[in-house]
Length: 275
Figure (cartoon, rainbow, N blue to C red):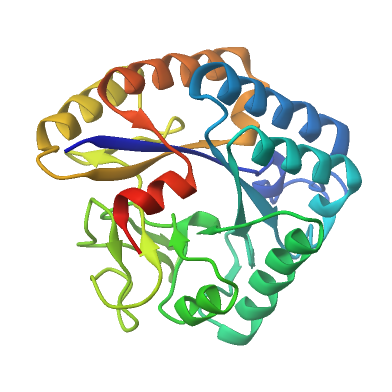
């Protein structure tokens, strides 16, 4: 039995989350983001044989922004290298309103992004909610769009903004499982598999949250548990690629993880977890 990692990068930019900036300054910058995504591609190609998922951002602030020709070229390059493109819906007004539990609104957001990517010759096969949000209402929507792997789970996560519940993954499994139509934190019989962020002892394979020491500890603990196939994700964000020290941390972290497990893409993950 083996330990498998999937390196995932959420395609977010830092200003999106800053409510102190003007609306104009919170918008994405095409050339800046394209350069950062090129760094993602180069890193994945040099260390992981191209295997990673870039989750394409869509939000009320940037509905079709990442369908511009410059980005479509990058998405195609990722797929050609053996990586994948995923759907990443930030359907919210950050820290104020969240719409992930509204089925009609989420159906439009997910379908518009997924079908827009497909119309450009791409093959989105996975989903992650902004802020790791999820609701059982999303499962049929993902199935309708032939998206059969979700990456929204950070086991144990319980995120509130004021009195608003944003994300709840309490008591969720720490290894892959089929989502339950009634409770996304339980195993069920839907067509959608959940692949959680790798974790151990309350720490996560999330470069923004965990030190390299913690990354090493998690990898070592997961390896000890690998009496069955384990498939977990490793999380980074596009904005982290803008800072040399954070980029170095990601590189070193991937090298550490590579000692303990194998990095795979979505097709290879399906082979491990089955259909």
